[in-house]
Image 1 (spheres, helix red, strand yellow):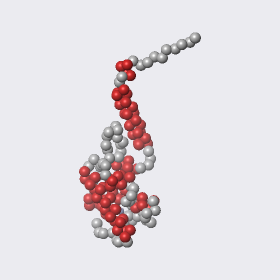
Image 2 (tube, rainbow, N blue to C red):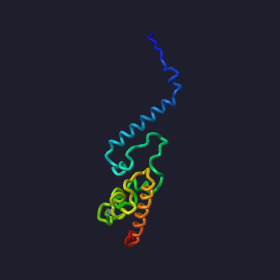
Image 3 (cartoon, rainbow, N blue to C red):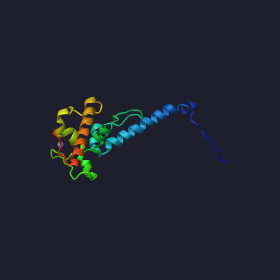
Image 4 (spheres, rainbow, N blue to C red):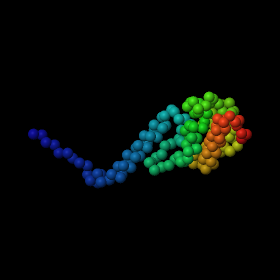
Amino acid sequence: MNEWIALKPPTTILNNSEEMKSHLEEEIYRRWQDLWNEYNGALWMKKLIPRVPKAANEEIVPQNVYIAQAITGNNCFRAYLKKIKKSESDECECEQIEDAEHGLKYCPRWKSNRPESLDLNDQLTKQYMIETVRKLWSQEIERKKGNPSPPQ
Ligand SMILES: [Zn+2]
């Protein structure tokens, strides 16, 4: 009869589960960053968020509904509204496609309040994004009522 004995790792390793969890978490976030780097979609979001969190408790995106729209390009931007059939046109008033990048980074209509670079860690950027998304919503509501856009 062939009997085998299962060997177990020493308790100095087994009792160190916090260290093991920490290694595992680092690996999970490292792999997530690799996927994020390789992903070819969400280009605007990737410009604003070049790196994912390094740990579960690291907060890198401000919690604000307007900033979320600015980052995702959803809701108030006409390219999105056209995609979900809430608008017939995806054109901005400056005749470019109005996606989030155009609206927030290039559109001449919002140039006066735009910070030099858009950085989610910068208070001016956050304020600019919130104000711009709110203006876009106001404009969209007026447009639905049949009113022309107010001057900027
Ligand atoms: Zn524009």
